[in-house]
Amino acid sequence: MIFYSTNKQSTPASLKKATLEGLASDGGLYIPSAIPTFSKEEIALLEDAPFNDIAFAIAKKFNGGEIPDDHLWQIIESCFTFNTPLVELEKNTYVEELFHGPTLAFKDYGARFLAHLTGYFAQEDHTLITILVATSGDTGSAVAYGFKGVPNTRVVLLYPSGKVSRLQEQQLTTVGGNVTALEIYGDFDDCQRLVKQAFMDAELKQRLSLTSANSINISRLIPQTFYYAWGSLQLKARHPGKEALFSVPSGNYGNLTAGVLAKKMGFPIAHFIAGSNANDSVTRYLEEGRYEPHPTIGTLSSAMDVGNPSNFARLRHIYGDDYRAMAADISGHAISDTETLDTIRTVYDRFGYIMDPHTAVGFRALEKFRQANGASTEPAAIMSTAHPAKFIEAIKEALDRDITIPDRLQAVLDRKKIAIPISADYRELTEFLTGLDDR
Ligand SMILES: *Cc1c(COP(=O)(O)O)cnc(C)c1O
Image (cartoon, rainbow, N blue to C red):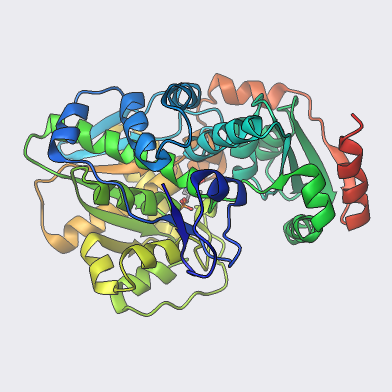
């Protein structure tokens, strides 16, 4: 398959090039030259299929033969070793739990697939690829766990000392093996600046085969289409003749973009609800057709605090820059922190189910959608992006109770932190990076 840049200035790329580059050289985001489609017959064949069979069928179309089928299947099998449960809260309302991967958040789907694809392409070229990532928390841990033990790759994470939560720091600093954490005495902007500087250093970039595992990488988006396809087919089996609604708590809108791709591929999806927090530039665009990004506002659903979402360029491109076409498929609702806390409370009271603040935004947005559009008979699933134990403080504030920490998380908290402290000085970073080769 060929991928184009949304800026249309750089040359089209293979899956390999798009994966290893992340961002196109013209600064645009890669999108498939044509969204692959599934016929009714092909979809009927997938209806009772296990998750990984559906994943393979989709990946195959995006791959277009670059990776041999048997190897692609192995990649899928190594990535998706955990379940994607669809939990029924009440008639027609489900939660699709995307948090059963190693870091208890949905970013594991994208990071693991990207890691295995990168490893495959590196091994093909007999190179060792170095992934350099600045992180303020969750992306870094998904990348660290995604690349952990993947041959021909090593990860260097830069995180700001004292500026990530204890749980996040433990997730970043206890992976070991091919993953090294650098504790930067500076803030997140310093970390980003250092990484940027390293990427502009042509000699260093070449010598270490630096790549970024950026969240806009097309190979992080492709695997996110798998759980929409799977979820829509599961819902169809339980509600014959109906198409699904998906409510998606959104920050950079990558998750939502993957959903839109799944719908365009032909999977039985009726409509999307995009829940945002106070960072509502896309919500407003869907209402008014004007896009006015704004400085980021801090909220309880912090992983969605994005004033200028990076994947918006992709969405716009997919809909031919026509906001009415986009609004016909996607309804946006912005949810305040007060509503988020209230939702965690009422969902717990009504169903005995504990939702993290991001999922709660999705739940409330679905309620608002249903209030505005009248009761529908379509089944709806809220995409649950994180395990509530990752946001203990918010749960405590909403429910005034502690929650059980899953064993996996507790094990991470008990492990010994290993991080290399360095100052926010570029020379120190290059000294460390060039020294890597001698280890
Ligand atoms: C990253 C993240 C989101 C936002 O996903 P996007 O693809 O950026 O819209 C939502 N919830 C959680 C828990 C996240 O980590």
